[in-house]
Length: 238
Image (tube, rainbow, N blue to C red; front, side):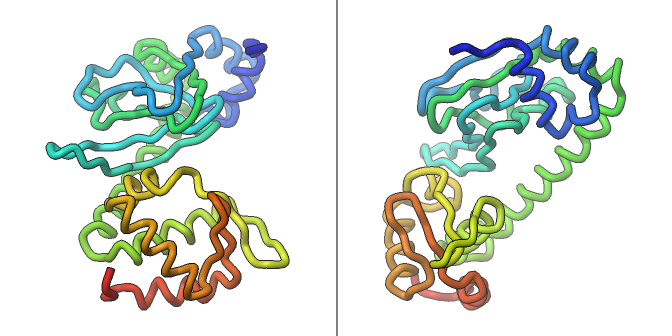
């Protein structure tokens, strides 16, 4: 695909845990990298499997999720280019605590467990930055637990839309515009519900004038109205 090792160095430099490494250190790390390519929906690692190493997203997105005994999925995170994935079991020596799959065609850079541990011994700042990444993931998981325990589908959907608007939105004459990262089924996985309820609640928000949806493009005419609706969405009927 025309990729070269220097391309990998630039990708690694974007990753939070590797930021601050010198060019020479990054080039040394690149020697440990193995590129792996995945098709949409293809599993990258499975919950319960021994951890072989961690991944860095070069292109595409990775969905990390848990699966209930009945087959229902709950998405924990969707990581895009420049994000590291599956770092925690590299440290604790355990199995992968969740599964990971490609959302679309994706290229990942794989770093073996031993290579990464050696890097941390050589450059302790990498391990310290890992603590920040783990802390952020823990806060996100606590937020997911709170949302699933105490809020409605409408509440969780609005919360997701606001996060996307804040992270990826751009201001236009019509309002803040952003693109949904996935179809309604994938959105359902993220907020712990089923596709039909996502579609129904998106339609309601659109009919109320809170959002305009065309394909995967969403425009929020007034984010303050959406934020106010989030506060009022504690006990609506779904």
